[in-house]
Image (cartoon, rainbow, N blue to C red):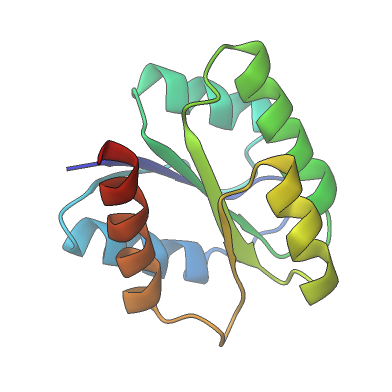
Length: 132
């Protein structure tokens, strides 16, 4: 069983998608810690470290995805916690996805492009490959 922090950074108040993903991950057998709305990258990283999380799933609909993901990745590195896998989703332009992946984001899921089954399947596959 994985421990996954699902987080909504910034001022965006739309969390239905994050809650749906959190429930799907929980139903797939993972322990999910949902941080709630309006979290700072610092709060999210602190929660992930305190909870001994394997992954952080970030939901970003505000358009600030480049800044928020970069800050999160940098904070994980500063805290010697770069082993925590970062993935996310939201309203993210296709052309930004390769840049986010270069930054260290493992996977981006966009609305309509991914079902909850694809997300939970990717999590299972990604972590089984890592432990192999």
